[in-house]
Image (cartoon, rainbow, N blue to C red; front, side, top):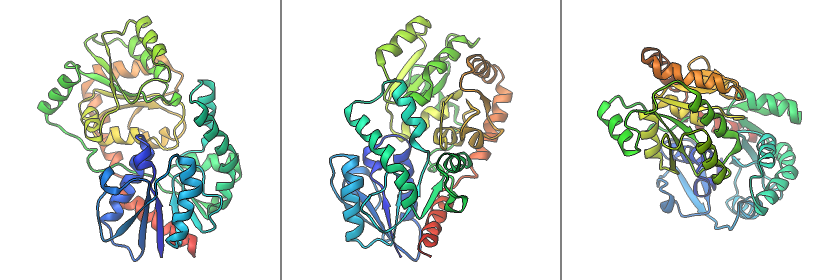
Length: 376
């Protein structure tokens, strides 16, 4: 069987979906299956650090936008290579492609689009893309031979909101790469903290411009927490939806000397930031899987997160969880984890054990099995 892997987000998306596609490709490169794998990209694999392997080959098809990629380039490439089954992580399948598709869907786009509209996120291209998604997504659900989802939460949403039959859905959790691991070297922790200007410790939070990240609540909870003023909060990512608004929030909360914006960081730097953090805080309003929570647990940082959407599944009983509207709850969680190192260590160890149950080898094996089923 010839299986195609849509991996365009590796070069176009610096967030979770790109890391997921990269891990799928890297795992396939080290695996042995009785199938042929063609990885579809819009940049040369050497440009984005993908491995060369006898287990797979690459097909590079340049495109100017994701819309062009999905509806033109990917369709042509899959036909040209006579793909038997195509795996894609996109909300929108190629409308003119008639082959079998396994859709690996991390979340339905409805809530993401609603939050973007409420917060005025995105320009003309984003609005055009969102409108296209509204039209194409229901078609994608019908066109996919099988829909793989990473959580029971996403499965339930598909069934409730789109009437997808349970037999068409398979739950395949994602994982994290092996570099996301604990580091118990105290000297390493001290070096990372000094490098980022937080020698006394810090709370880590993602702030990449997605309204779901609930950054305002994270800052309010941090400001409210009864902890040493030497403890910082480090924001990782491309920044808040409105940077001027973020600056004003920090000013009015009197956090000017305690907020550190690290911006976008490489995966290796992100691992360092996880490993040296006192707390990872994720009060997300909506997550189809919760990759960052899993990364944090894998790196051995105590997790404080929402108890809604898929995060309740990922965090299970190995994290402190609160409603994503509960500022006082999150503030209490920060206080508890920083003021009770023995309890924080118990939560940390439980998180490491929980994260170790997720494996890319298992994920990829089940995706390949899904393709076999789709053809069967």
